[in-house]
Amino acid sequence: MTRVQFRLATQLCHTRWMTRSPGKQRLMLRWFKRCADAGHVPARSLYGRVLLHRGISAREKSTGARYVLQAAQQGDRHAQYQAGRIYELGCSQYQPNDQHAVTWYARAGESGHAQAAERLASAYREGELGLPCDDRRADEWQQRARESGHEGAHDTTRPALAVH
Image (cartoon, rainbow, N blue to C red; front, side):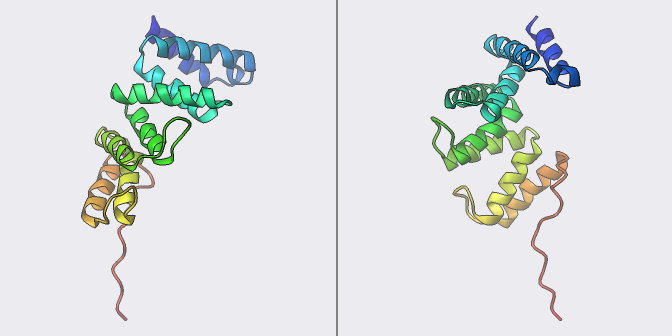
């Protein structure tokens, strides 16, 4: 029943008449919460991301981060990417931690999340997130991003200097 309720709520999210009403939005959020609390991983991921990014209070954002991290630990690649963002930028009770950020980005990137692979390519290229500058590793992650279909994952290798 949880999967059916989640699928229905997800489909209703994309209808204009449903999203214009605050009451209907609250109803959808209650459905997502019920599914997330029942352990449905995609619901945890989605509901957590909604709370994390759209929550008004610090408590809502904190709850969203908790749902996202639970879904990430259960293998949801979108949640793994968001976990990387949480640890890269920090939020409410989660302090920035480059090592955790890299771990979550790598898990998401290895699972086919193109933005995570793109972020790691950039981090290796620029020496961010506590990673050494490593063009070979950057190119490997860039290739993963391309293979995953990330539109922004075009060749960003530094052009060779033209000698005139």
